[in-house]
Image (cartoon, one colour):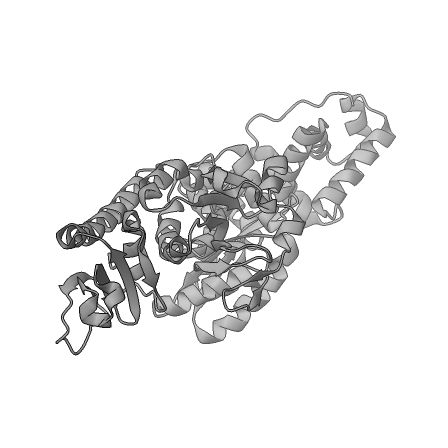
Length: 488
């Protein structure tokens, strides 16, 4: 790990150094001795020696100097050998700290455990937030006492719009209203040191943000470098990677479902909210049939996520897209435009009612690609009925190709404690006779008509379509154990 002058200065704070740092880059990889005869200094090293050899000033007769380019750190009254050993120790410490942070993060440590590793060189406040402004972790809060931001957090546990809308400025006075994906220092009117802040990202998805509040000017400079290292490790902490965490990136949740790991219901709900499924989601599977140009592939991945409220992940050499039926046409139009630049096969699943059906929808989309057998955009519904007719003995796949109204009614009945699916079965098995069905179910004819009307609305169903009625009848026949209708 290369160091900056601010990191070295922070490690040497016991000497109460005087510092003049103007270009604080992470370029220093070792130590060399300072000499008046030395004509050129490399930015790859920090030079240590008697300050008088550099400044030729009596005021520095008892000072030792560390210099790198235009940057200097003065340590008065220090022992030369002790200071040299401490500078060498700084390189060893920061390298070990980086390795320890990475190791702990990959082992699923918590954010608090990762902060403890960094505490010996950073005494300021540290706050972690999710993207909604909810406070996740706070350390060294005592340095924030009296700050309006922290008072608000103590009262509400989250950032409010007023706080997020404050005017932040960089050190040069340039106004900024948002954070970035790299560490930046922000000042707020009335604050002397401000905060160093940045977004936390996993696979290009922002999952939260980190704010560090330094207690000294030197620590403020060092915090920029520490924060970027810390941010890379913190997104591997258990708060962001545990399968039960609501902070897990949406694409990671999607990948885990495709791999067969079903997250907690609250986590699944995060997917539904992200794409605004509203009980009407779709899964698209995109296969690149041309040259495996991965740069183009990942640009397409990025653009798909931007084209509509969708979640995109890469799985088994496919792009898998979770979206809603509402934006489906927009996505397919976009993909058709991009087909000019490459050969793609796209499979589109039937509508799904909740995120727990993503695995089935993924297989439906793959089925559509296999049946399409070439370049183009293929819908599962186009091939489902024919496949059912020809492969009734293939129960594993056939049972996942039932008419989408079956799943819709099953979900609706569970949510609303109704009996629409049993009513549909009885009606179909009685030759679509309303009179016989009402008698069989022991319900009034008007009740049956209301139920049939509701089915039409939920499934966008045309009951005058012979093909649709046959598909429904076939699907109902294939149900292993139909439910028994009761009075409602």
